[in-house]
Length: 447
Image (cartoon, rainbow, N blue to C red; front, side, top):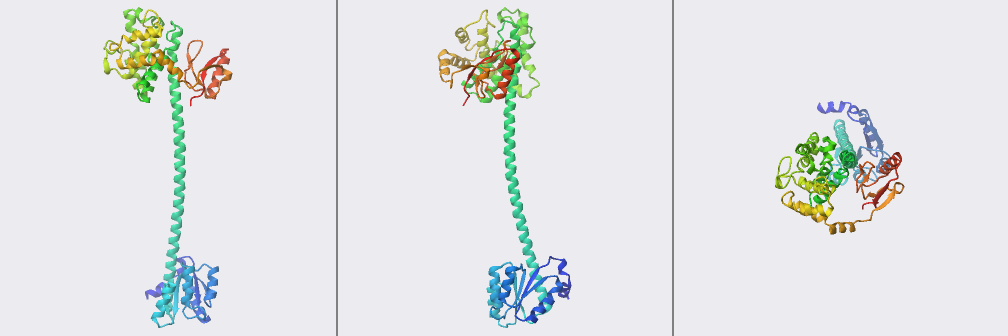
């Protein structure tokens, strides 16, 4: 009863049409098989022998083949054996009237036959066998479809991953370039900010002009010679550019006076500029290490400095370096002595401050890198000697050998700045607007 229900069900609605090939040398058997299978919605082909069956298989996509065992020329076992070798995906069934179990077993093994059905067959049994064969073929088709889909999805995923990696690399390169531009713009902004201090020197005795840049350069050389990390040396350089930013709020008359000539009231006011410099950077999170150096750059090794009277290693190393660089330039400008000193005189005065005003190690490093012989050797190691050129001779990649200073004494471009095409255009534009003929000292491009 259960088998009958299965047979009577409309199989065509449960699966797409499948193709059956029936092979028998008796026309009446082929007609009976066609009548049996046609109501099931399957496509039914027929062949009267093995040769015709193989020819059909070359032209048609077949899912199930049902072959009689006894046929002239090529029997069913031989046919199904060749089908198994040529089209292994086809489900193979054998119709046999043989009672010889050994012959049937050999045929099953040779043709890798899925099932055999005895003749004369029972319609329900044969229909059920074919339906199970069709279902098996359907599962195989679905398995192949899913495998193909998985391969396609894996390939698509691989291509997406490759594309994603490429986009990540491109985006990382863009971020790195933007970061480098930001760093350059940041440093350019710091230099521009330090020029505000330089402008004060135009209206005083001129000792401020170029002072911040010289202090920053000397401090960076000391830091690099002491093998400080690059980031720390850069912070010291920036602090050198900004170390006197707190003086912006001081009167011009006060800044024009050498420190020894200041009254007690003026000296007290002057002594506040390290605190004012630190306060000006309070809102900038990334500048707090620099702000600490600004506050402490007038402290002394022996604790007699200002504003906090810190001593020894309690003073940040960067501030101890700035103290040496700042004093060296101030001595030569006459800011902290009655009259300006030469470089050699300034070095001699500073040497007497070892262990009292200055950190001994920092001072020794400074004296080493500023000794005349050391400076001469450094000049000899330069990759290319500087040369003076007009703006029309400037080329991208050239490096400024000296600061480019305006008529008012403002440092427009610092030494070691690498010229670009855009920057050269801006220099030429400045020259035209001001009616000047600029002569710049440059070196060949850095390698």
